Each structure stands twice: as C-alpha cells, then as structure tokens.
Length: 186
Image (cartoon, rainbow, N blue to C red; front, top):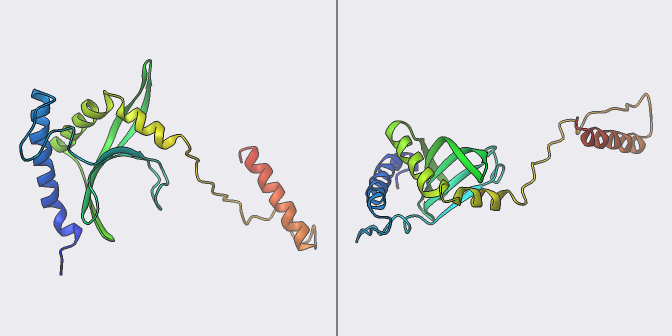
C-alpha cells in the first residue's frame, strides 16, 4: 500500500525547501543565473495565481497559490495575505503560509514557521509582490467574484397561519419580506 500524504509530506517539504533555497540564492546573486539540474527561479513552479474565497467547499479565505506541481502528486504553497492600498497600487501583507502536498483524494499540509516562514515571505515579497504579480493575480480572480448568498432567514415565517390561512399567499408574502430585508441589509 502506498504511503498517505501525511506520511510523505515532511520529506517532500524538505526537498522543496532545499530546491527553493538553491534557486533563490542563485536568483539573488544574478536573476538570470541557471542551475543545470533545477533551472532557474523563473522556471520553477507551474503558476502563481489567486484563489478567491469560496472557490472550493469549506474555503472561506482567499489565498495566493504558488503551484509547484500538479497531478498525482502535486504540491503548492498557499500565501494568506491582506491587501494594502498604496499610492501606486496594491501590495499584500502575508499573515500565514501553508505548504500542501496533494495526491488523488488525499492531502496534507504544514503551516510554515520560523526561518521557513521568513524565507517564503521574502520570496513572496521580492519575487511576486514587488513586481505586481500579486495585484494582477488578485484582480484577475476577483474581477467577477460575488460573495456567496446565504439567507439565514430563509425558513423564517413573518406571516403565520393565524394571519393568513392560504399557504401560497403566505409563502409569497414571506419571500417578499425576506427580499426587502436583504435589500435593506438585514
């Protein structure tokens, strides 16, 4: 039986961080520097994008995804950040970074801490945020974004059987009242 993602994630994360450190050190010396086995920083990973809130079930927070590989298995870093509007555009302040290791119908993640957190924040800031990749990815994802509609009062009865004995009329009236409450914000 194959190992689960939870059993494999620590080794995968260690290898990924070693690779990133090698590429990052080269990049910081010379942005065009190239490693014969690994390539360079520009070639590492598949994509950098923003995953809007509620893209997936039970995903309330949006995040920037630095997807390194996909399929079975795949891995990615997720950067959770708050936008900050500046005079010349938008920048983002990272408050959490997670590494995800995913294989068909299985997955595990680690929250970055200490020097790994600092290292990945540096990559996020210098490689993605300073060149406005974050702003572009965020704007692309949020262009057509709509907050999911959750009607907490969907079953609430404003008009009950004592006030109106015709169920169809009562249901219609209750729907009108709910819609008016939603339009007025509550």
